[in-house]
Each structure stands twice: as C-alpha cells, then as structure tokens.
Image (cartoon, rainbow, N blue to C red; front, side):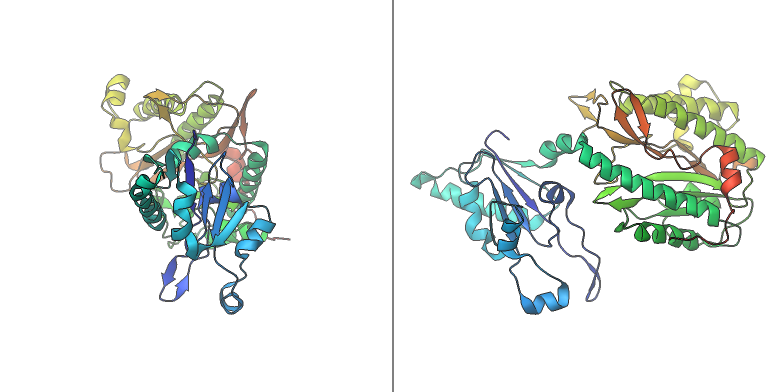
Length: 424
C-alpha cells in the first residue's frame, strides 16, 4: 500500500418492502479482511501505523438487540482480535481525519458505499485546511479493487476449502433437481428443492438468484421468474449455486424434462459439451481466460456451421461476430466470494495468465429462441449451457463440480429417478 490507508464499509441492511428487510450480507472485501458480520461497520487499515487496524461499529444497546439481534460493540470486536482498536460508529467523522493524516493514498470502494466516500472526502478536506498546522492530507483516492482484486484472485488453502464446500453443496442440489424433475412440475418446485438442500447443508442459501428455465425460457440468459410449468419434450436449464462462508458455487446443467434428448437437442448439446470439455482442459498455468474464450468461440462457430445454423466461412463468422446470435456471453469469469469475482482479466492490455490458486468458471452455451424463424425449426426454443467450476493447479485443472453429471447417458439415467428427495 506504500504508505496508504484503506477504508471499507461493512454494508447496510437493505429494505425489502415497507418496514421489512433482506437478510444482511456483509460487503465481500470487508468480510475478507475482518470476518465480521456487522451492518454499518467501517474498517480502517494503515500498515505501519500505530495502530494499524481500527473498526467502527454500533454500540451495545439492550433494547435494540431485543428487536434486531445481538451486537458485539467496540470492546467486543477488539476482544475477538478483529482490530487493534474500535469506536462507536457515530465517532467516525471525529476520528477519521486523525487516522488518515499523513497517508499518501486512500483506497475506498468507489461507487459502492456513498456514506464512506462522503466521510473520507470530508476528512481529506479538513486535513487540507489544517495544512498550515503541519498536517498532511492524502493526495489521491483509489478504487479498492485495484488493491484487493489481485489479492483476492489467488485463493489460499482456507479459501479453496470454503469454495470447495460451496461447490459440493451446489452439486448435491443440482443432482436433487435432476432426480425430482418430470413433466408438469413447475420451475419454482425445482428451485425450492435446491434451496432446501442449500439450507439443510448449513449454507446461508443461494449465492445469486437461481435460474431455472424450461423450454424457451432457457434462451433468456438471466431468466429468474422460475414460474412456468415444465413440458415433456423440453430441456430444463438450471444455473444455481450456494454460498458457504461467502464463497459461492456456480454450476449450470441442461437436461431433458422427460429424461430423453430429442435428435436436435442431442446434436446441440453434444456441441456445447465438447466445447466445455475442451475449455476445461485448457485451464492450465500460463493460459488465459480470453484465450480460452477465443478457442471456444471457434469450436462453437464451426459446430453451428456444421448444423446449418450459420452460413459462410468460419473466419468471416468469427470476424463479424455472427456467432453472437446464438452465443452472446463469455466462456469464463473469476469465481470466489462474489459469483463474478473481482480481479483483472487484462493488465496493460495483456491477458492475465492463469496461475495456481485461480478459480474460474467454464460455461459455453447456445441459445436458439423459439421465434428465430431463420433457424431450422428443430432447433428453435432450445437453450443449453454447461458450466463447471475449475481450480487451477500446478499439475492441471481441478474440476470442483465434477460430481454433477453432464454426459448424455448419465443425464438420461438420473432425470426423474426419484419422486421425493430426502435431506437427512
């Protein structure tokens, strides 16, 4: 940090409707550094300063705690070793100038916590006015992602174990969904089965809003209504993952509602599966997410040509991005405490090379809308995505989501195989 200071907000409770609130989830960067779940808290970190770490939290309040839950209070967070000193959050404006004085740069979550931005700017302005008294104000404000993005990108063994557990629970939930699926059930019933598995396993719940789309709904990338009745002969696409210690799984599987792929479904699925397998194999030290995507695009574009969904030369299709009619998203993203985790993809316009401890998704897909009259009729209304969670190791890729079936014969064997799911 080169003499800089870091100021993070722990997050606020968000209103759901009127006087009810969503379950609180702390800011990922704040939790990464403090492990504290405390609405409204602020963390100040200055390496080499005395003290280095300061927390501002809500004070103990017996009456408020009856209604809204226990608080640790300033002394409590110090006793737990989460900071060297702590104050009532009401003292932030008073104490912050002293904590930032002499810092060269202040790292803050720009655009994520307006209250922290205002507090920091107020402190900087005050220190500038005090320059005649010998006090020195920070010279610049920098987005915290520039500091913590690369830091969080490489997972240590503790983070890997949390991520592995999140993916393990997510995998069980996907297999529950496959077993429970059959025609005439509703998308929300499948979602409910998965949510139950998440919570029964001790997770806080989904790491993001689950996508459960049958038939043409699967061609909507972020379909979250999950309200339609499942039809025999359609495919069901499920993109869902649970959160464990703020690390989230992110798995997608697509399978036939009635347990049997049709000819066109099978052809399109095999194309996506082959791209998925090839991309996973490329998740090795020194490769890059952008390089993997370029190769995946070439494979899918050639397959679309072979199936008659696109016409022309492969080079023209790629250069003109005609493939985006059926493949409009990227092949990978970083995975961690945020489902689309922080960390750069390029530095100075050069692709970031994969390194041991990097976690990413591999998720090729193809989507042919029901109303696409230019596509062969047999392919219309088919949406397919196959997504795995991959950890880069020195000796090659580790597929964390390996337990979830994706081969056609495996899927046809498991879909609809159970009338009820047990959670014991």
